[in-house]
Amino acid sequence: MKLQFSEKDEAFRAEIAGWLKDNLTGEFAQLKFRGGPGDEHMFPEERKRWEQKLAEGGWTCVGWPQKYGGRGLSIEQQVIFYEEYARAGAPGRMGHIGDGLTGPTLIAFGSEEQKAKYLPGILAGTEFWCQGYSEPGAGSDLANVKTKARLDEASGKWIINGQKVWTSLAHESEYCFVVARTDPDSVAHKGLGFFLVKMDQPGVTVRPIEQITGTSEFNEVFFDDAECDVGDIVGEPGDGWKVAMGLLGFERGVSTLGQQMAFQNELDEVVKLARENGAAEDPQIRQRLAQAHIGLKLMRYNSMRMLSGDKGDGSLQKEALIYKLYWASWHRDLGELAVDIMGPEANILPEAPYELNRLQSLFLFTRSDTIYGGTNQIQRNIIAERGLGMPKEPKW
Image (cartoon, rainbow, N blue to C red):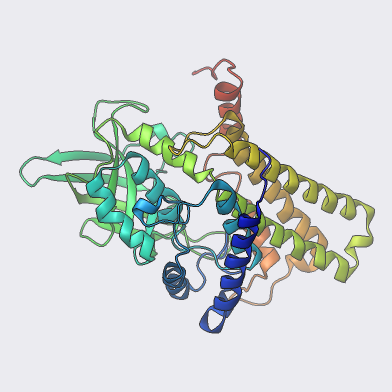
């Protein structure tokens, strides 16, 4: 897919770039280039206020249909928005899960009542969401979830019991979408439901997980007779797998172009350091920097091709199957390149409490890129089985 930007598109680029320049000032100036992967714990309240600032300007949920409060932007203009957002150094989005995942999923699969109940808070930047997929024993193998949901006829509530893990920003979120088993006798991807659960209620416990970086944006979440209304299941009982897979398609959608611009910002910082400390004089370092540049360009071109299959329901062309494996490996390699360019001081920190610099944090956090969202090993199985039609891995 080769995107052609019209004069109208370029005028739109100037509009969003100008708005960001005018508004990333004052209390928001400190947020520039903050709140990304490995830094999501920083400035949560200020970034929530930034979401509301975006909403005031009409810059939340830009790809949603106008019927639901979005701008209804074309793919080309959505690409421009995410690129300019990252180019300006605007902060990591506290509303990303709601804006990019929950909202599109409800628009595609939800009832009109669910849309009326949940979309306005996402659009206004006042209600934030987290993702209840992974569990102990059900990470890359999501179909192995053990969390259960049963309908209590007397109260008209779904009662949820179980545990989720690696739940980003659960401690900052008002809601969680939860994949749970509605049929206790079901196995694998059958008998699942997709639920919309309020976090601030008895029966929901959030426990931070301290990471190798010393931060805790990830959490364990425990559901002990937590409740949601009978109308807070998306689709029917048993539709959970279909809805969950549709959501993952949205996750690999147009916002990936913004992710790549953030990667470009990181690569620029690595190149700048190499020039300043003389590491760029090393031919092997120069070659690795060139390979990083080439790899990022290839990532962009494949994303353009991948987006050409967007049907609005989360389904994408088979090229999308390689995206997670590719970017995770590229980003891990960038982290390793960063510490090699830093040299011996990359391994040195002042006395506790330790303060990582941005490139040290990048290195440590990117170790997780090849694990979360589906390990590299699982991604290779998916490419082989779903993309290439090869025989499934034998079950021993």
